[in-house]
Length: 129
Image (cartoon, rainbow, N blue to C red; front, side):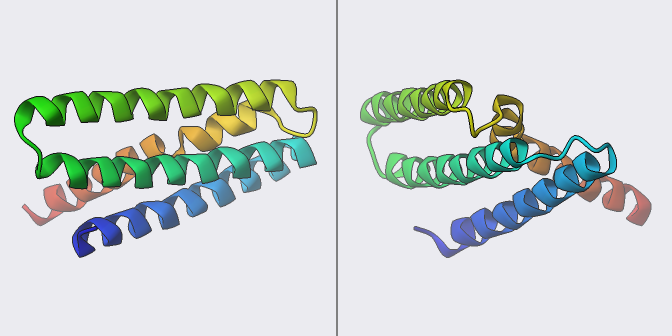
């Protein structure tokens, strides 16, 4: 895998951990912090990081393929990642020691971190201009 891509994954993973810590802080302030919520959040975040790495691998492989094969391969990998997400949410809903809301928040951490980083970068660029 490309070094720049690995660095970006590390940066996003660190951001996801900070996101988790902020969520845990917010839950502890509101007295809604419990073991099931923490386990669900950690479980969801770990799967989100795995999903991000699978996406990076898919992108790396797809770039070197002809367009028709790349489209089929990337679509099948997308379907696999969505099935993984569905299984994770199903397991979280059925397992008594996992909170499904915490798991969903962990799974969405990638999106929130990317949006936050984009907003912060745009805000800094506006101040410089």
